[in-house]
Image (cartoon, rainbow, N blue to C red):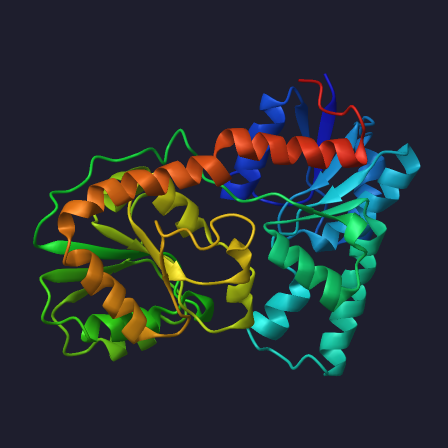
Length: 354
């Protein structure tokens, strides 16, 4: 049995990490874990004292760029490939998502040089879709042959197709996620304001920095409700009670190359989905008419799509089933296993034993 060594302080229960670990197991791999100290220098020292066994592959989980230098050192020492699955570029997050500093600032350029240098030393950088891979290639000058793609998918043993609610009023349109600029929760609130004449309740589940602003924007509306996070074990059923689920509608650059978990989970529970058009869907969902595509940042387009679908409620259950079919085709377990198998064969020919 080949062995992968997870190198990094990443949370094993984080959705993407958990999914990938499961896929490794399904492909016949054993998983070992090494949690280095806070920084790569201390982690390197710790690794020598830990007497680690040589694996067949080193895998860096999400957000662990700080652990890459020590992992790369041991990859060279052992002559085994190092694959990093950052999920989010630190440079992209600080510059384009948080707007902490401008792209041409010294701090941004230092961060770019540091991160790009690490990416170029790894054997492969895994991104969540081809649009994100294009961003890393173009913005960070990482060679294309060092980039791979593995979608996020969903925990399909948990997010299963849910019985549809009655296709009649009152209807519920739901958002589940974090309140941050890329989500466009302000667009959702504005769309709800445009739909006050409809028998629709708009429910926004989650927390985040932008929530107070969204709540302030919703003052005076009686067709919108904000709740905190619901218990994870109840989430599929809660999503299943909604007639329509929403994706993201923000206008930040990040929204063009990210497919958030809420998209996969909404599709997995077999609910009609409305979200904005983005380059991230170019090689998967594309322009499938099953999805309710709207222009980013456009509350009128979102309101019009909800109005259109609610006007034909008898079609909502069938649309939900077709949405799940799309999920299985592009993001289901078989597809995910194939994508990981391709990644492993690129860095370690014959590495997939099953």
